[in-house]
Length: 295
Image 1: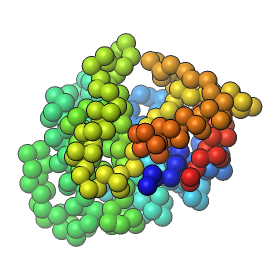
Image 2: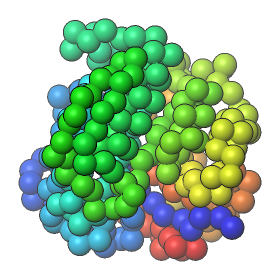
Image 3: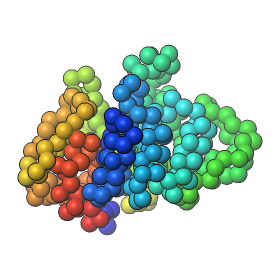
Image 4: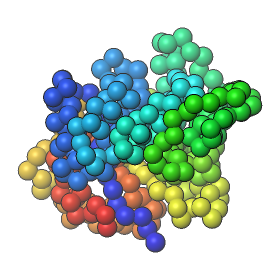
């Protein structure tokens, strides 16, 4: 049985508090499920926790999420406290998105060593295990290769049980298998280089095979997500606008009917039900959201 469709909006900035809260309310009013913020160190992008807290306060049902936090930028004890606090103060509307980090340039700019992909995935796996303990246990002891915690108490219990939803984004075998074992939501991406999608990026069928293999019986419970930043709806009265540069993305111009048909086919074939657009598509994509949300 496929998961019902829901749609998230990736946004990163606004000119003022009023503009940000107005945008959050518009996203909610148009039927989108989630407002998502990336965790990048560009000076023009909001700090995710602060901006998401403001958006949650301005809305009633809109879910909020990170898309995604770079694990190496924060210690998991600090991250779990911030996440649990936001989940509590948003009345259980926060989704914790995590990744291993992709920008060596950002690490270099901040003076943080950019470890090998294998080491970063190892750290992320330990971090997730520790965060889950921190969400569920009153006293936490943890001894791993990368993190050690001794007798830590006083953590804030999140509202959502047994823990708030965890989204893991990735494109490679190790990341996708980790996501299959530990996540509730998997955002399947592509391996991208300076010139666009890397020719060595495995086909989607291979990525799904890795997930199914690692997930086992829990595969049917997983929600699969995908970014669809390239789709423009041709019969919409509002043309998409963007403050983000998607670089390699090749635009698709589709009617509402064509987009609905394509997304239904993609869910039937691959299982994608949680779809992310960027903030410039909010109004342009609204007819598709109205047709598919919850179905």
